[in-house]
Length: 310
Image (cartoon, rainbow, N blue to C red; front, side):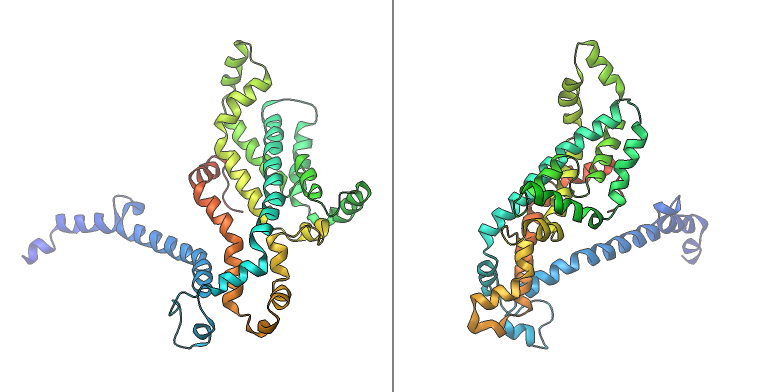
């Protein structure tokens, strides 16, 4: 029995089990990889789990030293008060109008520009493309003063047009990265498809709408989701161009404490971490729903566009 245990075939089988034929096939390597991935995933998911559990805690659970993670009971009053303070549904509609329209326009325009750089030859093409990419590096604060003066002269301040118009002309929030996404994707489409369509009498618009766009749906979804999230979380541009006339959920969150004190003057001292977390969870909820719906296309678009992190 001892000879079989230490026999060469048994040792080889054990070695193949733990190390594999190649190192990345073995049990040790896979265990390390899965442990690392689970650890990274926990780092990203833990804030959401913490936010979710705290939002259902009442004041007693928050102050109790014996309650760590799960609340003793699901306390929904935090969400009711957050709904009222945020004026959730009217403010949500405003946030969607300020976020959805610029994100859609920015995605469409970035697709046009990326297709032009990827499929056509024209003078100074490389120079212009480099200028487009440089705009992503330049901090937006540098151009805010001249843009503010321009919008003031045009009478666009305190209206959503101050956000929509730049996005419609390829100057939206981080437009350069979306142009690069579409450029990389359209470069991968074989030009033989264009040539075959041109032999059948198709013009460039037909090729773009009938060939390029159907193939680039994942890139559209990826660009739209990134654009939507960035516009949704934006507070600097919104506070500068929209002022107090147009209130988004993010801007409402900035004044959450004062708004709570105005709405519940007798309970001003009762605002706690649970109420704040409930308000934050309500604000990120639309993004989570949209991501889960478009998750497959989003991941496919990232894979095709070659995005490694942002």
